[in-house]
Image 1 (cartoon, rainbow, N blue to C red):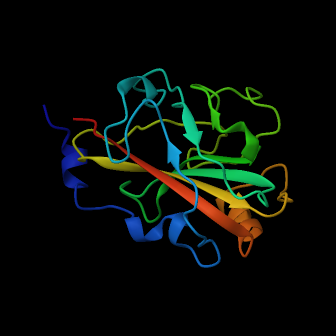
Image 2 (cartoon, rainbow, N blue to C red):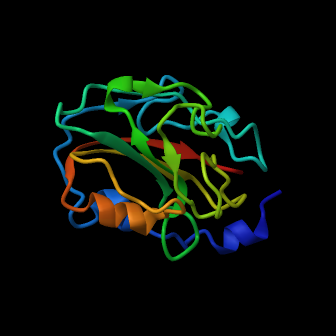
Image 3 (tube, rainbow, N blue to C red):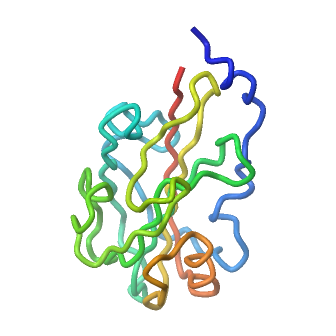
Length: 187
């Protein structure tokens, strides 16, 4: 049975034009590639990666090709621009990712301390780490944009950082970036 709230909000979406990928000072060459063995670019994200209210809330495994050698760290931001709110919902902010890792295993973003050196920022739900897809039922398909930025310096951020702190710290320091989109729909 369709959810009346989701149906009523069907045309309300933050907008793909508001994702971090398009922010001033964060544009860099797309000179490396982000993939996942769990889903192809533009394809549905499997159910086991759904948010904690719907599923296991595991983060999918991610892999990337070599970023530029000048990259000091990688920053991952996962946003849902289809959320029925003013700005995209932020599902993950992770900084301090070692560019040499070449990827993150399944669940690495869901468990604090799973990968040494990674620090998590506050997402839209107010907590840290991975928050899988949890769209309002009957709202329609949502796109989850995995944005990986290679920066030329270690970011100096407060312990309790959020998205705007990361954006300010990265501005002018993005030397490459990679993107992977997945979709999820809660009927």
